Length: 419
Image (tube, rainbow, N blue to C red; front, side):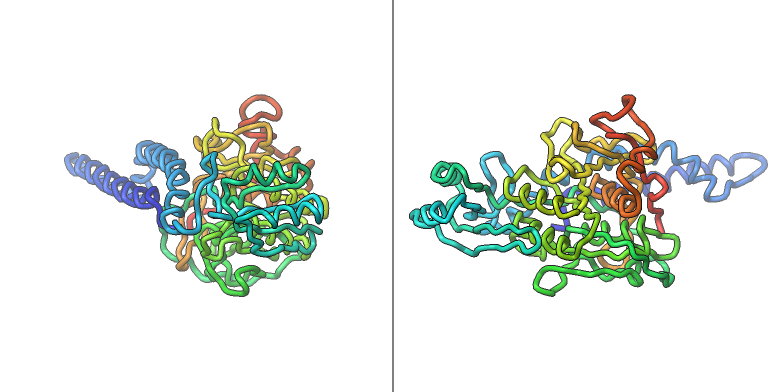
């Protein structure tokens, strides 16, 4: 799941860019040597002269590769877990031969379970959300048949939700993290597993899920570092806060499923957190929507990435559900990312490229995507109100709220620097 076709291409394109820089530097040096008086510019000056050429090319390469990565990610998972995953009629990734069911009554439950070919896998109680639903083993092509049998019930696929961002160029490891006092701020995270990284060495991170086992992954580690990381000059947007990180993937075939995301929401609700970041995207799902609404009713403010399927794509969830703070991403020039989703649900824009975050093996990686804009906004909302953030937003695009930038750009000062 971590090594993608786009990632392979990205590394090789980065090599090409490095060669171009070296070639341009050689030309500059040769030109200088041909002059009667040789005055070589120092390296930073050379780099600055090359940036007008290399930076736009690099940005454009990232724009092209980001949507490519998302298109192939689902196919890679299908190839990795062919016995466990498939697609629904709309092409969305789902767990094979599983449906989630919330029957309207005990009688409806009995009728559904009595159908030939339907087996109860488990009954899930989402403690803290006051929800209980059934996980059924059944041919997913029978969803409409089961819905017709109990029109007042709620039934849906076991959809898979995926990260909405990519990690790119690897940097050298950073320095040691200075110790700091932990504040009372508490932030929730539902993502993939969080690695033990120098940037998180002194952070207060409560990990949950996977029956106590740890399955660190690049996406969750990067998002966590953007929230509470601290290592030399690298500083997360809420460094010093307490992070409660739910692993909804566990490197399992059903990683990112409705069931796992909802269980993470239930845990964070029990912990009585105020703000939760979800940098995962997927289709509308009636049961996950019910879990999200139950968490919101109990005080959770959910911040979510709008996704990277492009401006013409249908809205992605949970970002597009009412009450969720939907975040898009912009580049260092304040232009919306070419791959970012758009729509009336967009609330804020935040830096989504030109960011750096923690990688899996103690290194740092360059980040791109709305996945990495969302935690910057979540960090601000852990100490500010929505109204305060709206008042502080820099209006971009059309005057007032618009479908591209929402109320405008925030968290520009929280853009993380390369260590």
